[in-house]
Length: 498
Image 1: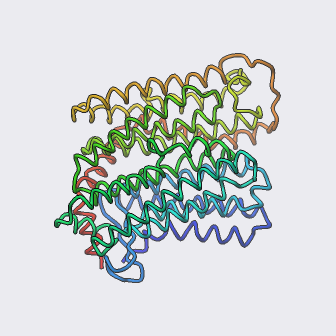
Image 2: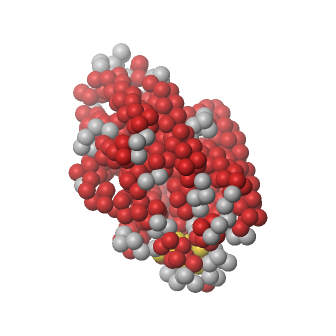
Image 3: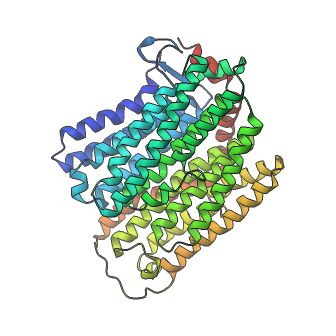
């Protein structure tokens, strides 16, 4: 038995406990959070190195063999998700040290952030459904508090909607788990996949699959279940919003990919067709809502919805190339959306507003920040040679090969509207003169400002690198997709690990 799969959970837990022990000393909490974030990233790099050849790392907690005990398993998809969590942990924790106000730090931002990361990592490594539910509740509990931290009116209003719909999602998830356990007598994912392959099929299983689709769809922000997202995500500080946009909806998408490639194969034409239709509607509704907004955070928040549609497009097409595109797109959008929210937060820190009509002239005033924004914005729109272009072109080619003409047309149209939304932000915030001069609210010394920009610079470099080194990125994603499409290696690794 290897302890490797437990480290992404235990490291942030230890960091959260240490932060609580020093809850009255903000400086020490900052140091602990940064050190823990670097440990999370180093561990993720080690896990990535150990599994990049297709090896599946399995741990049976307490040496109870699967399917009787708690199983942790890391395949290539889990591995890349853990790496992305590590990258976000380092960047967002460093950004928060400069940007977040002291009252929020005193009320537990750093331990809550680490608990959230623990829950996210737990969801990525768990090998059974009940513990997937447990990790969802851990990360949701932390996110509820982070969303309301500060007690501002808009935050509280957004958090009520967030809590209500996510509790509905959790209820559906738990009900589906109960029915599935009654049918199969197990909640171990590998054992469930094994039983389904051996004939546990039928209308009841399809009904349960739809329940899981709805539960994960709410958490992912899938049409028509996404209305909580634009109401809640723009309300907290930029560090919190960046963390949420990068990770929370992506856990829902990851769970859907895991379940609908491993367990729910009883009626692929119907189920994946339903996902594909949902993907198209998610893309269209999200981008149309974004074009009508003139508040920077709201544009970016609604765009989370449309980007989720692209990831689900690959799952709906359900071919190896399409899943390759989904994995590349998942990695691309986590980095880019996090970076855009951090940049928006930096603009608000300088000028005290997100309103496009009140901003202007930042291209001259802050050329470095302008360059960081335009690179990430163009990547989100799919402009070559950035990461978003290669992710989208992979999905488009997969759609053409599958002869799904309608989803291809939708994906191309939504990409053009995304370009319009991003150029609208550029034109209003950076290019046009400011309607009236706005002084810097929080001027920083040049050295401190450079350090503040480092997380955004890092994410921008990753965005460019994913485009420049698109070949190796594609090769890895292709192998991960092949592992998902042929899950027998996962089943054998888990069930044979005892």
